[in-house]
Length: 312
Image (cartoon, rainbow, N blue to C red; front, side):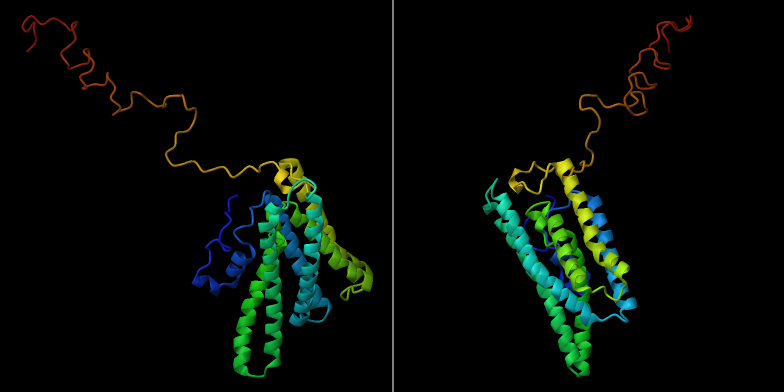
């Protein structure tokens, strides 16, 4: 793992970080114990899916239903939180029964408790935001409205950014099993969409557009989940039905090359120009290493001078 299991935020939060709620949400809802993703391409698809779904939902609520209502948005968030609180433990419990056939569950206790704590933390944040909005709207004091409005905007950014993060990592369940986030996102999206189809709540759309809008999210989530689990199976040998302890080791990141480290073949001598200036060539002029170099007086075949047969 590139990240180590330690403090929840990994020591990334400072006192100044609380001025930026999205930074706090990044540290809180994507803790240090969540393993890094094995496939960045799948992460990009998830981000595109989440952004497209948010834009489509806000467009339906603002354009087709006659205005954006924060209270209705919070009610939907509370409903989704209740579904997550019920559905996530049930789905994980079913998978634990499957994994129990091929391994023990004691080693999964710590990541399971961490994921449960992250789930409860997100649901608690949504409930706190809903209570803050209701309390601020119920009072008529200007001071309370100003202070509550500032806190409400901070919490709104915090919860929105947190929802984006937990949608990608699905409450850190990847620390339990790499395929578990894909399974949970698929099951949750279908369970949320089916009641709208049964009750006929098409959000002001026609029959055709309403069905497409409601089924678009679960179909897209299912397609991305199948792509993710397929790539995990082919590239890393990770299967949903196999116990996490039986998975082959995942290759870690390549360590960076230290500065000044030699490159190339370890047994090849350093290459270069052996006669470059300053390298100590024994035949360079004026070095005294060549007995026949000009001006050294050591050439035995120089022209004979009868006046000075032995030189000056």
